[in-house]
Length: 234
Ligand SMILES: Nc1ncnc2c1ncn2[C@@H]1O[C@H](COP(=O)(O)OP(=O)(O)OP(=O)(O)O)[C@@H](O)[C@H]1O
Ligand SMILES: [Mg+2]
Image (cartoon, rainbow, N blue to C red; front, side, top):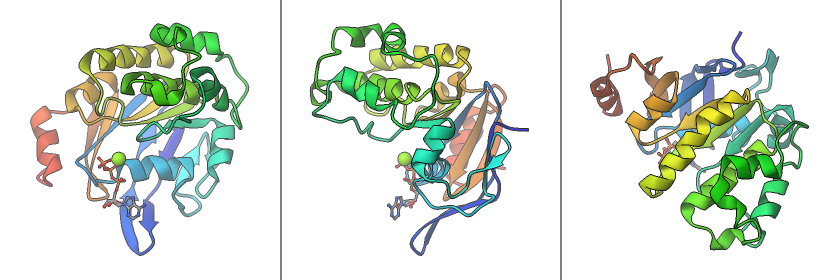
């Protein structure tokens, strides 16, 4: 049984349907990538898993329990935490305070401020700085750290590298395997297809709210993924 899975997941914004019968699965210990062009529905899928977008009962299963329709607080308490698109730090709180906010409604577990600073050493010297004064890369580190402070079993990351300098992206990407070693499973939205494939075990390509290509990351052809962006996937 998968740790987290969707079953014919439909999602709507008012009358607009953003996801159509999506089936994805994340196994314990795995990293799964979601790939697709702008507007495909990647963020909507993560938001549906978190409970930010309403979904019908039975469409999301977590650890054998149906959680479709659960509130975001409830999902975090059950062990799913997210790094949202745009990072959404509290600009007037310090790095320490932003990280501590992550504990709210989370689970008890091993992550501490020290653990986060070991994962992202460049943050340690900035722990008293305000969120608003951080670079994009530092903000992303704090957003990941904040999610980990909830001691999740599943980490959802929306746009790992978007808008960040290449060197800092490497620092952040290097943290993912270390996070996985602690037993956290990861679902990742990443625009850079090669990076998405290199970080993940399995990948799903989404176009216009539907999965149109999927497979083990090591077996997917870059050219096929490009075609899937234009709806030409086999
Ligand atoms: N709050 C909203 N209200 C109405 N429609 C929305 C809303 N958020 C997203 N949509 C629409 O839902 C569809 C999927 O959007 P979504 O943000 O999930 O795509 P995405 O794959 O994350 O794109 P991007 O790569 O640009 O982040 C798009 O057509 C988008 O315009
Ligand atoms: Mg998005």
